[in-house]
Image 1: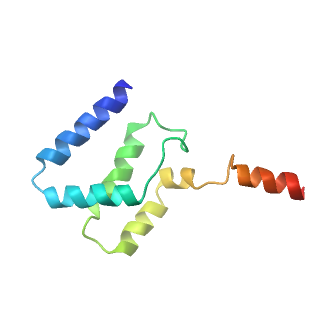
Image 2: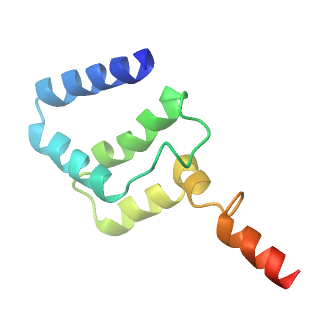
Length: 98
């Protein structure tokens, strides 16, 4: 949990003290829409992956939706979250249909 607290402390410091408050708030709102769950991803300890994912929203806060969606879709965290590997629905289909 120490890593989690330190990550949030850094994020809070940046978002509360950054000169571009509107960009930070839009990035936070976008990250609330395009959610990636730590429960679905095996790399919860890799801070760089999560920071890179959040940086998509900071960098593209004022871009068009298509650019944001493309960046999120090609991000490794989202790819791992949306994979069928280990999915209960896939296991059910294989078991049912052979």
